[in-house]
Image 1: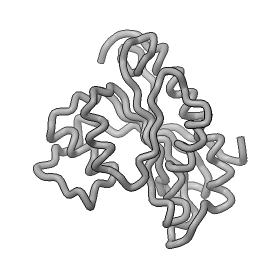
Image 2: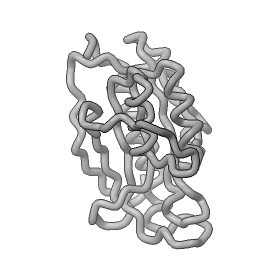
Image 3: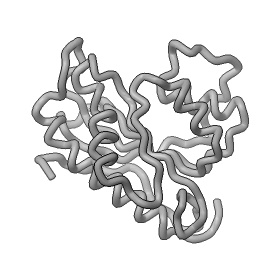
Length: 182
């Protein structure tokens, strides 16, 4: 699993209804995002590729790269939970994998869409603006070491890809067993 240290600010709570093709009947989308031309920013893409080798049965896994507009369109297909995988600078040691849960109720609905500036925050704002009924979003992030113009992940971030894939699998499995509705 590499040398990744996993920290979590998200709490899996009973009474939620996430999942796709799951026992709960809800839908889960695992979306890898990031720019592979900016070094460690390509982390989400690398994790999506790893998960695509053997995808979790109860989730859809996709590499969205820098195609935030496509992610917004995909979320309009009725997913209940988004598990977003991305490089996330939080001041941790490079390679640290974190699980975060944004407060969807606090996201300002977008009043317009800029197809060239659709970062994850913009995607969630776009979805809120269009009334997409996303119940929950989790972010599996990795502390980057270098997001400059370069090809490939740095060693500590590359070593965290397997750990992050395992975290995503664990989250999907946990979400798949949660009962009830939000």
